[in-house]
Amino acid sequence: MFERRKDDATAFLERIQKSVGKYDLIYIRSAQGRPILLEARIKALGNKQERTITRKKVMSSLE
Image 1 (cartoon, rainbow, N blue to C red):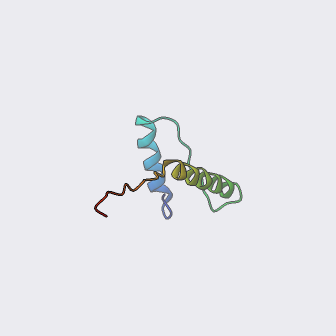
Image 2 (image 1 turned 60 degrees about the horizontal axis):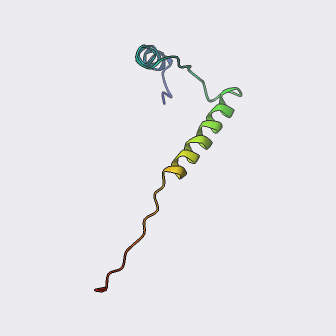
């Protein structure tokens, strides 16, 4: 989310923890952070597929 400045990420972390709760900053360009990023992307893709709505088209006699 914050790719350039650690100060911005730290300020965001302090504000979000007050309202939401415990969060951690993860540097994803490291060997430890990369698997966490990939796991989050997989979970996000799974959630997106669960939310996909299939629609049926009803044909009328006029078509």
